[in-house]
Each structure stands twice: as structure tokens, then as C-alpha cells.
Amino acid sequence: MKTIYGYIGILIAACLLQACESDLDKAYYSDGQAQPAVLEALPETYTINPLQQNEVALTFKWSAPQMGYNASITNNLEMDIKGENNFGDKKVILSSLVGNNSTVSFTNKELNDYVLSLFKNYADEAGIYTIETVHLEFRVTSVISEAKAPLVSNIVSSTVTPYDNENTGYKAAVITLTDISELVLAAGQKEETALPLTWQQAYLGDNASISYAIEINLPKTNTEYNWSKKVTVKTTQETSYNLTHQDLNDALVSLLAKYSKEVGKTEISLSISATKSGYIKALASEPLTISITPYVATPTFTTVPENMDLISGTSYSLAWEAVEGAKYQVEMDIKDAEFSQRAILENGLTSTNLDINNAVLSKAIKYLKIAHNAVTLSAEQEVEFRVKAYFGNTETGVLSEAKAVAVTYDNSENTPEAFYFIGKYCNWNFANCQKLYLTKSGSYKGNIIANNLTGEDPNNDGWKITDKPNWNNRNWGGPINNSIMTQYGNNVTNYGYNNNTSYTVEFNPNNGRLTMSNEEKSWMLLGEHNNYSFSDESKMEIVYDESNKKWYLQKKGVKMQTGNTWQIRSQMLNMEVTPQNTEGHFETDVTDESQFTVSQTGNYEIRWYFNEPTPYVIVIKE
Image (cartoon, helix red, strand yellow):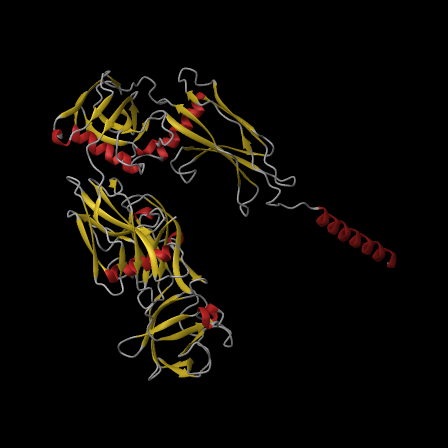
């Protein structure tokens, strides 16, 4: 029996030794050693042939990525439109290869199907997309696990011409050649014809009712060309149209605004897109290239102060030259920030001047500094102003030259007397606890949003209220009897529920009365970007900013389109944070002042600084 036990002991020891040796011999992922795949170049242009659908169109080859050890790698070949979404949520994954495979080919039909799928991802609000030559980009992302960020290869590109794979007999319109290659538009001839156009009818099936859109964009040969920035000049069901000086002028101004280019003589590409009712695709004609000089002038400042003392003065004025038929938007940002976090001081103006209240401007600068993540709010700051003249929506228009102004402003916090709401949520640290602020009635009140407000350990969980940022003076805790807190009592551990994090807390130190109202589980960021949907993905996160010593609710990576509206709303009671009941750095919808909005398409970070004497919202364009 002893011999059997001896053998068993030897066997166990051998297994343990083998396990230890195995662990020592393991290789682990190293960011320093990892190298992404290298994708080989493609032909500069490729026309997909509908008559050779089963023939190979493009072959993609790349060198295998290196992870520093023999890992199981998945290589995803991705495609997107150049300059659009930067391989965001609209991209198309062409293939996912596991292992050492580093070559994949696609037939004409396969490639065409993928390109049309990509077009569908970029369809307009009506679901319509145009089939036309497009500049595509490709890359390989290599993944070993969800816990590690993928390795991303170089990007290669090719200009590809697809076809309508469902109706290969359909034909686009053909523009009748014109001898006009250059146009100089005139303000005194707005209603007169500048460019007469005619075209051969498109074929989209027998007896089809066809609509045509006259569209302009930068030529595809322009390095800044962006497929989705095209502008529709006019629509018609006829096969001819006389574009006026104003038609072309307004369209060109809108186009240049989309590219953030100054208004001036520009070479454009003009094409005719044809579609029919119930058909979500549009076929584009071969384009014309025309050089156009618009008549709209850039708005020019006539009055801008060199210096602004916002502490001693009351207001300052800005003025500019009129742009005929335009409305105006006045913008401000920190100097040299390139208006990346612009503050909209006023929009929808029809006059050519703006009086700026000093107190309003001081707050705008303070919130701009926060949007730029400035830790120290200097009382002296250089800012830049510019004015935008626009004719349709504010995303398109003509920008003035930016003017820099040296500003002295009130950067003080003006924080009222406060009590301290300290607890497990901040590790019982007075330096980063939330506060209750003195009200006119003598009580102390504030929005408290935190985790660990209840718990089982009376010596550590829960929270207390103190009148100073230390334990040397008065403090109040539990037990609570008839809403009266006990001075120098134990920690409060029995109010609310563990999954509720948000309260409006009011405390009267004269009688110890505590009022905790508006009990909430969480707060949501709701808007047109998520169909105002209450879901886990809409929840905002509690954040403590150590550098600025401030608490806020945050939602990052919010993808919004121009004109999208949104709100901050609580989960259970539907309490709302809107432009009408808060202040900060944001834009208000001009048609509904209860809604926030954005005037630029992009990704945004939204912050609500809830635990402030006057809570405020900061919108940061990422």
C-alpha cells in the first residue's frame, strides 16, 4: 500500500513540475513586438465588368502580422469610402481569414455586391443611394482576442466603377455636350440663365417615371474629393433645365462650406443622377467639368475691439459687412484652436451687428476652456471671433476671416458656502467628495449621483454630512428618525436601494432635517441618434475629474448628424436636462428650445456637471 501511495505522489509531483515548466515556456503577447500586416497596393482604377461576373476582379495580398508568438489570428479585410467614416460603423468587411492565409480574391460580381452594400450604408434619409464611380480604401485589422486592440495595417486605395447588378440593362442619362467650360456668375443677373442643360433620357425600365437630380461636387481628380459632400442643385422630371446664376451660386457656396474652403473660383464636376419611384438606387451620368466664379462675397468684419475687459465693462459690439440674402452665425473659440470646440454666440441673425453681454461672454469662455480640458482657468485669454453667412442650414455657408481679441474675464468660481457629502463612493476623501450648497432658506442642497450610497458595513459603507472638509467640526449620520439625522451619529447605510445612484439631497443643519428626493437608477443620453431609446447603451457614466476636482456624468463617442436633437433624461421619473433649465457649452435647436442640437456631423462627448451650484452641460466635438 505504501508503494502505491509512493507512486501516486511521484505522479502528482511530475504533473505539477510539467505544469510549471509549461507556464515558464509560454510566450505572451507584447505590444512592442507586435507588427501589423502590410497590404499590397491595388490598381489605381478598376471598372467592374458586368459581362464577366465570374472572372476575378481584384486580388488582395498582405504580409502576415507578427504578434511576438505563435497566436491564432483573425485577419479582417475592410472597405470604406475615402474621407467618409474612417472605417467606422458603415464600413464593409470583405473577408475574415483565420490563421496564416494572407491572400483573397473577389470576382466582379462579389466585388460589385460589396460596393453596393457599402453604398446602402451611406444611403440618404429616404434610403436612396447613387451608383457611381467611387474612391475606396482598404485595410486589414488583425485580432487575437476581444481584450486586445486589433493591429491595423496600412491603407491602400482604388477608384472603382460599379454597376447595377439587379438591372444590368438600365442606363444612366447622357449629358449633351456644352461648349461652356467657365462661368462667372453675376449678382445683377440672379434670375437669368447661366447654364442651359439637356440630356438623353435614362432608361430604368419601360414606362418608368424618372426623376433627375443635377448634382455638383469637386472633381474626382481633386485630392480633397469626398463622395458624400455632393450638393443637389435642382431636381426635375424633364430632360433639360436652365440653371440660373443664383442656382449655381448657392450650390457652390454650400459645396465649398462642406469642404471648409474659402469661396472663390472653383473647378466643379456636374452630373445628372436618375432614379424612379420605389427604386432606392440612382444612376449617375458621366460628369461635366466646369470652372465657376461665384458672386457671393466673404463677410468682412468692420468692428472688432482689440481688447475686451469683461470685468469692468458691460458689453462690446461686433459688426460686419452684409452678404445679400444671408443670415449670420457668430462663433468664438480659443485662439489657435481652429474653432474645434466653437461656441455659438448667436445664430439666425438678419442684422450685421451683435452686442455681447460681458457676463454671458465670461461664462462662454469659461465653458470653452473646460471643453478644451484646460485645468487652469487663466483670467487673461486670447479668443477668436468669426461670422458665418449662410443661406440654408448653418453647416453650409461662407466664413469670415477670424479676428483675435485679448480678453480679461471673470474666471472666479463664485462658489457659495457648502457642506460636504462624504462617503464610501469617494473613499471617505474630503478632497474629492460631492457638496451641498447654501440656499436662500438656509438649507444646503445639491444633486448627488454616486455609487455605494448604501451598504452592509456600518464602519465603511454609506455616507455622512459635515460642515467642514474635515472631522474637526460638526457631522451628521445615522440613524435617521422621522427624517432627522443624528449629529455625530453612525454612517447612513439604510437609505434607498443599492442600484439607485441619484438623489436631490437637501439638509437643514438647524434642525437636522434631511430630504432625499428624485430617487433614480441612472441617467440617459437620448436623441435622434438613438431614436430616444432607453437602453444600457444610452446610460451615462459617473466620472470624477481628478485634475479639475469635479464630478460629471459622461457619454463618449456619440455619433450625431447635422441637426440631430437630444436631451439628458432620468430613467424612472423622466426628469429632463434641457437648454431651458441648464447652462454651458452647447447648441440649442432654434425650432424647439427644449432640445439640444449639433450643427456639425461628427462624434461627440457629452458631459453634465451635476454637482455644481449651477449645474452645466459641456459638449465636446471629438
